[in-house]
Image (cartoon, rainbow, N blue to C red; front, side, top):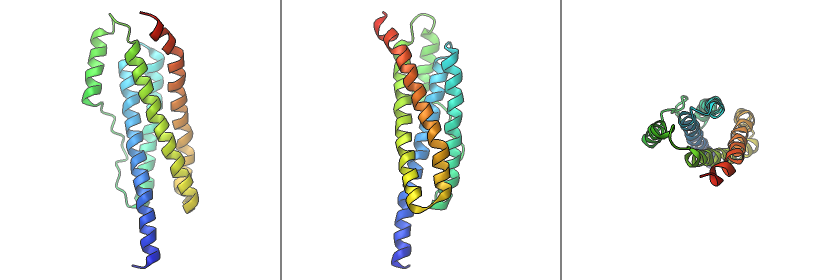
Length: 173
């Protein structure tokens, strides 16, 4: 192995780690959005929009698995959309108390979680895009340029829902 090929291996390993991390975060975003949707079934807008935009992250997971192969990764192309144990407990609690209590604070917490997760994914997409440009990896750059705007839209949606609901939740008793 030459010094140059060894250096490429190190770079590829770093890029692979970045792809793997973004794959994990996009998976987390799918789960966060589906948990939000399941817990807010009575709010049809949140329910349907959250499910729809979770589909974007599902596609991102698939795209990252595909481009990760060039960096020696074997990532699952299917998003893990099973809610965690905590998510299932929260969902059941929401179902049991939904008719009697306003679900305001849990809604704010879930929207904050979606926003933070999408913001982290956005930063990772930016890092990947800059890396792809530096490496002249047109396939990776194309994926980043197609997926990143959708992640930004997910973040903006969560932010808008937070703005729309936070004052009402925090002020009313």
